Image (tube, rainbow, N blue to C red; front, side, top):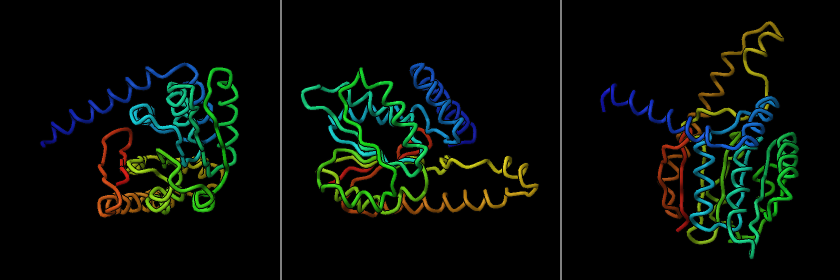
Length: 241
């Protein structure tokens, strides 16, 4: 592809994201602003919509999302689970690495509770501590986003927890997203009078290297069939064999 082709592709990707954002509800726009005000950068609208479509496509009944203040994604998933038959209510387990993130999720769910039959379990815990407590083979989908620690052991956890043909989604494969509820390098500099941009660049470089390794791991892992999907900030989509 030429540089001109890549430019067209970038413009097309931007159009897709803008369209997905414009079609989100007023509630989602409000929740996105609340999360950003709390210091949690939210994932892309097209990515969250893709997750929701996948839930409905595979008729998922039990979904796990590992995140860090992943409010928008969680609300999209609740909506998707709620769209399925109420005869067997869907369940979403939101494992959040931030206590503040769990508060935001619970508040959002309370606003939706009268209009949904979805069961929500919200846990503030590290993935490698909480996930081993869950029953194996009970879940249809595992989604990972947010802080780097959430991705640790993702394939091993997912293989144990997912049913056959269950889906694992690893978000931000391009390492463009920073989910931590921490001050930006600029605000840190203004507060302390020091330049922290080098630390931020080192952290970003580490995340890029980590995601590159996860991409390699996905295609090398014979327990899954995997693809790298150009949605949001990139996604590793893996299906349990």
